[in-house]
Length: 117
Length: 111
Image (cartoon, rainbow over all chains, first blue to last red; front, side, top):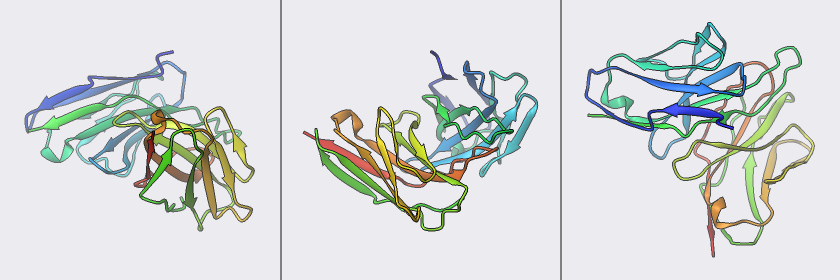
């Protein structure tokens, strides 16, 4: 099982450049998330999506954009890269049955390590 | 979501049980306790979760006190590969599945 796949694994950007971090899951999960993790810190939620066509902001959304056109894919876009966005980015997915309030755990990808110089 | 408090670091000898405590004194009646771990720089890995009953799976056991204000994650026979940062998280078990990661406990398993 592939689970949650993130690409690229590493990337170096110059200030002001843009890029898209890719995330795909093959578990038919309806919920998907983007987190960032700065050195020595816990994860912080950037954006999340409860299904195709629906996205919402997390704790630290500034400087990022997302879209969810399919159930499987949830790309994260950096439009104008800044040094403060140097971090490790994790994508995750989970299944939530809103009718019965299921609480399934999140499954994480292996991350994208992004440096902005 | 309720706040959790964990020790910064712990040590454990290989083959012994590792008991990782977590305080969540402000937990609400509908909030679950989740445990994740992060090995080196990999993505967090789900371990176990529970509401009020003790839970066990192939990875670990979760003991929740009767008043639900604290819990303990037990790794029954720790191995070197269990060296990781362990996160205790409480959240409402419905809808938007938001996880708030604190600093966690850095567990070092030594030979």
